[in-house]
Image (tube, rainbow, N blue to C red):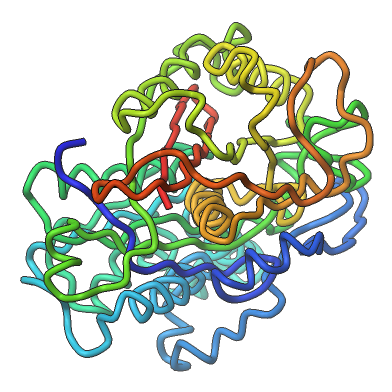
Length: 413
């Protein structure tokens, strides 16, 4: 890409804890954020953000006016914006700071709660705040209001790839010259009883809670909640104010399977196209990739298809590239997944160590030779040169959403 888009701040609230650094250290340590909630018909484990104290970033008045998914987004945005050094004031014209937040289901907790109120207490008892709390664009709206961002503010809704596509929307706003900075990411609070029931009915939930992507005994995923937010800036803007640059969005690729509303195209050629486009826009070769953060849901079809996609792109080089899925430790965060996993990948590149695919014991032999492990994997020094000629690590993060939405982000750090 001709204009460099860099990352100057990251924030995360996940089942592993509060903070982007906590996400990395606990994931690499092999810790799980999943909790046993074995309830008939609802699956075995759930990833809840138990360490998140909503009273810390929000006043009581704010809490009452936000669905949990918005609360998580605001907290992660606060962390990212603080790390970017915007505490003393915005780094550019507020009209040139965009905000894109992805979510798959928005304020479902509010909708579910108020639906119950209507049926148990009557329609007159339904909260007048229901609409502004449940709407999908509540999170980007609150983040923009909280920090005075006056550029385009939009919710991105593309199922499990929403967070990743929100990042790309921010990148594009900078590349097109419409913005100098962007606050982007994803948030989700899809751990309600109703959400668990509908995904269990779809046959996607691990019945025993032992979600182990790429394992020969994998049987589905666990639900999780959380948020991941990144602050993006043009390299010119970041350098001008002396900001610390954490990494760079080196490239991206998108495509649509146009095949089935939930199942991926089994030949994987369109997902492979998105991955190849990410490499092309980054100006990189497959051999320069240091790590792949896989979509890795733990379902039979997804994992088989994804490894097929990786093999189409990397060939025999795939045997030497560390691959892992963070969903094994935090669950599937749906609209937040792509953003949280991008942050996890960025941290892995910066620290030189990729988190394990937690619980993996017996790699599915049908997947062939691929470097996926139940243990942390050290990353080799990077060979992908940055603009200043310094070799950096290059990572790829895949997000494959229901509806056939394929997204790959290439990060250099």
